[in-house]
Amino acid sequence: MAVTRKDLDACIGCRTCETVCPMDVMYYDGERNKSVIAYVQQCISCGQCWLRCPSGSLGLSSELADFAVNAGR
Image (cartoon, rainbow, N blue to C red; front, side):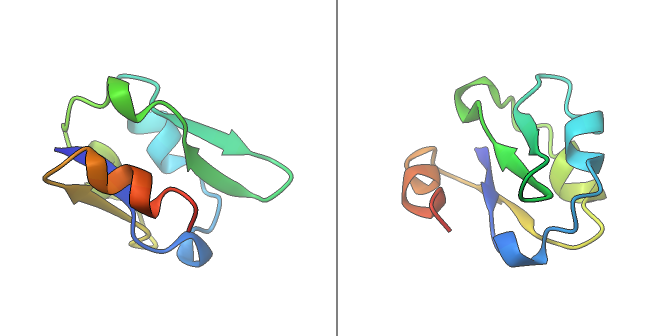
């Protein structure tokens, strides 16, 4: 499993996902005020980002391949 982006528009730029991720998977894009899934290959599927995301913009995928499809959204 790996973290995915369900809805980029829903991201409020709070940086919670970046703060709670033990593997530094997330990156904050200050120009867009959004978090970015930058290093999905490092995701250990702990679910902390998904569980703590206040806007519900993140999800967990059962397959890493789903990330590539949803990365541009």
